[in-house]
Image: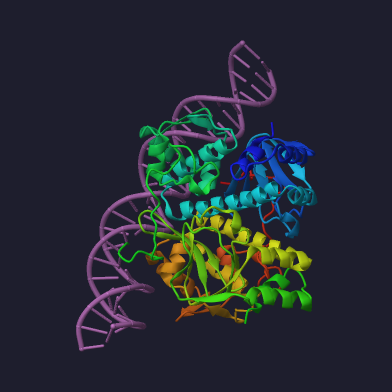
Length: 261
Length: 261
DNA sequence: CGGTTCATTGAGATATCTCAATGGTCGTGG
DNA sequence: CCACGACCATTGAGATATCTCAATGAACCG
């Protein structure tokens, strides 16, 4: 069951049989079940072990003063949280579940030890951390500068590629256990517009979505429609239909193009 | 001159004289000057050394298809970029300057070696990386769920605390070398609203801003007005006027309060 | 001194929000 | 097994924040 992390790391680095076994051993030593819609880690909580999502969907989130919620990251099976968390005084946000989640708790020392004894794992883990940061930066770009419709489509694309990287996507889509309100909280839009945007994507024959089952009818068209370029994700640089149909605009002279805007 | 990193790390960990000297030695070995409005690292560029901003203001940014720009992080003196970048295939964004910048280039191995020989430095560096991630998460929250006015004020508060942590703030404000358009690109708003928001903050007697010189007239009031809580930043947990006037709302039961919204 | 760039301001356009009404689904209790 | 209630997604209409565009004027550069 918990091959997802192994699958993801292998996108960066080939791992030997010994590497895999050591990783699986560490990753499955201590795990616990968390119900849907519960906190795995609460805001303000002190340093704890590293968490690895083995099964189910979770998120980082934070409440605003008025009770609204911003989801700052979606955590899928194979995702690690707080690899270096030992040094923070207290969580400035919480980690909560959407679905029932199985989470492994790994003592930080054990992980460091594993990385030291298996250099490919160490390299892959720092790569993994870099990828999560790239995802966060992309979220800033999307939320800051894209329309609601594009944000929705972009997130659906991101999830498709991420789930594929851990072996949890079907050929033509994936299971999306998030309610509209959860997606809306992640994208910084209201549920009303969430509905509206999804309807438009459906009307354009880009996706189908019923009962938590998402089908991407035309990935290339969807990517084009929402300017999604998967190169920052694992598994985003391979396969025909995932490759961006248009080369990303380069800007060799640096900085803002003089003529634009 | 390059005490800024030392000053910041000291907020987490006391550093011995030997630690400081070793850190300064590594940090000043190779440095170069970059003019204002140039790229330090270009999009797509391969792995390189770790960068440390010694002087001046820079940012991570990314262009969208239509030529608009999203700034995803502001880099101040004492900030490190790409501590673990050696593992990424290519930058998915660029790093550019606002002002003339002095940037130190540190071979990744040398930094790891330094951290190994001086454990307090190693701990402080991982803490520093955590703080940058916390800042990024906070940006997502702000851009996603706050009004333009709040975003502006929030960013001004963030910069105040960050600059104070590296010894670059005055008692009552700081030099802000960003043009309105730069702030707008960072906050995901247009320049028109940028002007408008700044005018409103000025009208409420919270700030003064002329010729790149920002004065925060009433930090406590500003923080309250934009719901800024500096606890996620270095130097954010000390000092009377920086402490949040109202305790952050806790949510012990986890998840969305049932009654709200 | 002239030209360019850019911040500011205002007016109109539009995307998104807020609120309320509807209806479906699910869990619960009879 | 059915009926009821709670919750929530959807939809529509009106309100509003923000955008876009154009005009103005200041600052800077050649």
